Amino acid sequence: MKERNANASSSEKEAAGNAAASLVEDGMIIGLGTGSTTAFAIAEVGRRVREEGLNVLAVVTSYQAEMLAIEAGVPLTSLAEHPVLDLAIDGADQVDAKLNVIKGGGAAHTHEKVVAHSAKRFIVVVDESKISEELDHFVPIEVLPYARELAKKQFIELGGKPQIRLASRKDGPVISDNGNVIIDVEFGVIEDAAELSQKLSTCVGVVEHGIFLNTDEVYVGMKDGSVKIIN
Ligand SMILES: O=C[C@H](O)[C@H](O)[C@H](O)COP(=O)(O)O
Image 1 (cartoon, helix red, strand yellow):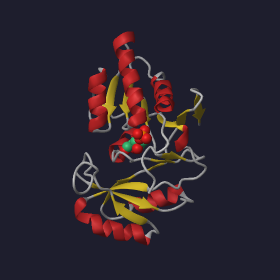
Image 2 (cartoon, protein in one colour; image 1 turned 60 degrees about the vertical axis):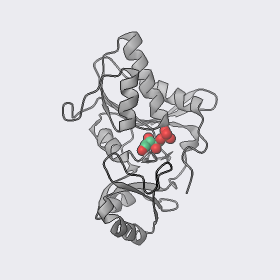
Image 3 (tube, helix red, strand yellow; image 1 turned 135 degrees about the vertical axis):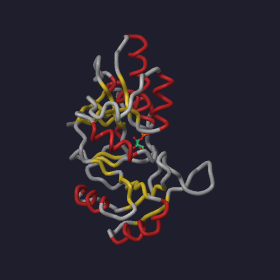
Image 4 (tube, helix red, strand yellow; image 1 turned 45 degrees about the horizontal axis):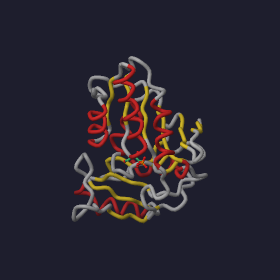
């Protein structure tokens, strides 16, 4: 299984995150994703709040995003109060040529998907290493702990090789912010992301999977410091 952020460069991530943060306008309600690339966007939105008096409210996707937003001084709200977001910014583990995306390397994809689908405009921020002609990254799937063995059986029936994600600084599995386990499933090259997305959604015990089909634009931080926009 590919290692998380194996080829990542923080200056590329920072360039992408800052460019996406520049899209935030006064009065917007925004969604803030999770991960090391979005962290730069959150920091930059916070800087604009503090230094430019930018007036925003943000919905977060994880405890990580919440902690970063509070630290940066970004005022928070909830989807219950603001169910429609003007813009959501989030990272990705892989992006293909059709802007299909795999997310969930940080186990936050369930809330991230809710936020992405609540936004009028969904921006993905990545470094160049995440761009691929086709999707071949493992798919993170959040599963009810009670259903984990049944879920694994269903993923194998769909042609996948499932592996329960283990924690690195705790014995046992990673437990998501929602109290569930994450099963990472290798499918090799994913020929039809929409079809696999639909099949995974019908598996009993699945809370949410990491295939996202609704990206509007991808901001790619390049090695030369520029940002390429794909839409
Ligand atoms: O669950 C985590 C998220 O989907 C992240 O946005 C994704 O894993 C990318 O994270 P990073 O920017 O750290 O590579």
